[in-house]
Amino acid sequence: MKSIVTILIAMLAGYVLHAIVPSPVAQSAQDKKLAVGTSPQKKAEALGITFEKIKPGYLNRCVRSGSLLFTSGHTSKIKGRLGKDLTVEQGREAAKECVIEVLRAVHDRHGTLDNLRVVKVLGCVNSTPDFIDQPKVINGCSDLLHEIFGAQTDGWHARSALGFASLPNGVAVEIEAIFEIRP
Image 1 (cartoon, rainbow, N blue to C red):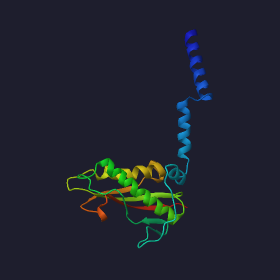
Image 2: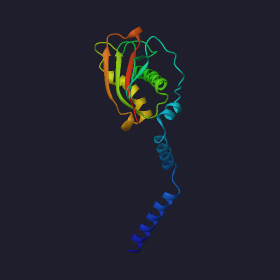
Image 3: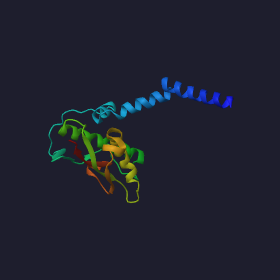
Image 4: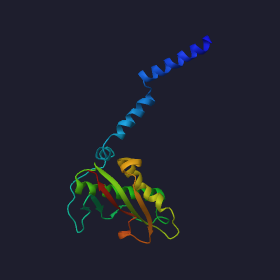
């Protein structure tokens, strides 16, 4: 009986010590909790995304209607066809390029990425008829939106990932999105 009490006391002391002096693993978990509380604007900036004023062009890159923001399609700098010229990973990078441009357009119109919810994403992939991994390509977009807005909260969106025989100027990916402005 004495040894069981000794073991229980030692275990309790270990729990108390762990609570008082967190391990490096616990500290990194605390850092992650702080990152969760960071605003989408700050998360995007921490990822190196910059936001400058955009000069008006032929078409409006982002339109507000009521509490919704609708973006035009934004294309990647990466060119080529998935299933022929590009790998899925290169396609994911192209989708990420697109969504960064989408975020810049939204920021230009709304002034911040804060107080927004991602509602819908349309991803268009320039691909061969036998290419079937369009959703994996557009994950490059969705993953970044999840990282910035939260995978289970404001970044959790409806999405379509479609294959196209061609996209403007031979780009690999084009993405448009709808955001809701939160009160």
